[in-house]
Length: 153
Image 1: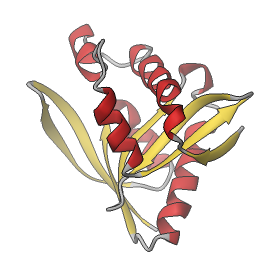
Image 2: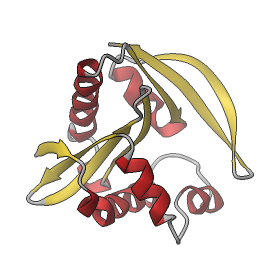
Image 3: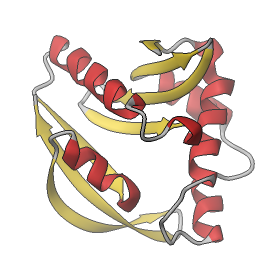
């Protein structure tokens, strides 16, 4: 596995990883409606392109295929971290976060904030993030539990 910077040509593979990850969530009680809301059948391609291009986005590759990606805003917020379900639990997410943190440090960012879903909270805590609070967020009409976590770097 190796990690590199995002390139615009990666968008379709990134969307494949995102949909694979969200639609194959295990061990959490997300409803079908929540999953479809989170990963709708028709993604807003221009929004994804703009979002990924205006942030620090790294991709993890294995055998020439993208298996995960991490996105950090220039203000220090982790926007997205998704790993293909076949590669979850194998250190891909940890390596992507370590890489993003190093990139953030190089850019003078002093702390990283993430609004994490319940499924991701434990991962971020293992990576040294501190949970600041639990909150309920309205995302286009659906209410989700989210956790605000922070790590000083």
